[in-house]
Image (cartoon, rainbow, N blue to C red):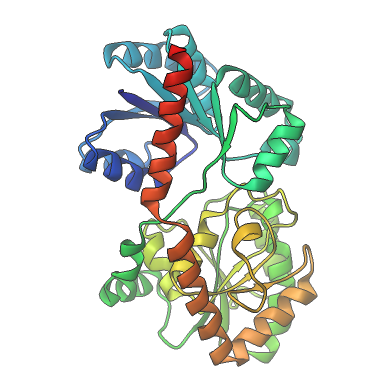
Length: 378
């Protein structure tokens, strides 16, 4: 079968790069359509893999209509048999276009389970409900997401499946030290700096505020320790930066924006901090997995995939939600205990290699597509 992947709200994605690499190896024909406000790095990445990729700009509400007809044209001209969508514009435009193109095999991956409730958005909830109605198969990324979708949207078990994100381990394990050092120099980070890394878009539910409050105490005891925050700007960006300034922490907490080379990025960290504020906040948390494979000592709350992977004092330190005191104590312990950092990081790497093989993810998707094909034919 020929597959079209339709996504939005994306810049770079190793997940999609690896997926296309694996499909190419298996000679499975596919294209990718990206609906974005700006042209993403993913476009060039996929082009370099010889994938037919289309970038459709989203400028305003009229773009929904324009892109709807553009997607239909692409689907029909490419003779697409299965459409797999994700994220708001990808879902809304992609599922509708597939339906009106007569494509019966329609799949969606839920990348943002509680986005609609986090931001109290009726519009997003409407998109989600329409997506889940039109899709014949829905992929949840974790057991917790599966349970939420099943309960809140009343999706039947036959329609709902769980498939984790995964890793191409060799990209991390065989990364040259030169590439890591080049990124460190590019970011202007001195070699003797002890780095707590936080890769988190500026959304209130990512828990930046608790990291700041913990750093206020840590900076007095350990002036050589810095918190570097990476990721895109979001709704809480100005609030968080103002909080840093109010506490005179500009030299201790540094924002470095979006970094394209996320594989090298985690190798720079001494500690990886990821602390969403509640169980359902993080739909998956790819950076949790990336921190693990990179051998980082991690401080985590249980949200997204950490509910499955995190083992307190075995491969990470688990802290309660919304507790700056707990974050402070965990970070302090890891700063002073080199052996503990190494032990947690080494075990995390072993666990990532065991649980997140990329071939397994692709196999599960292809099995799901075949199951859907049989159901359609029946």
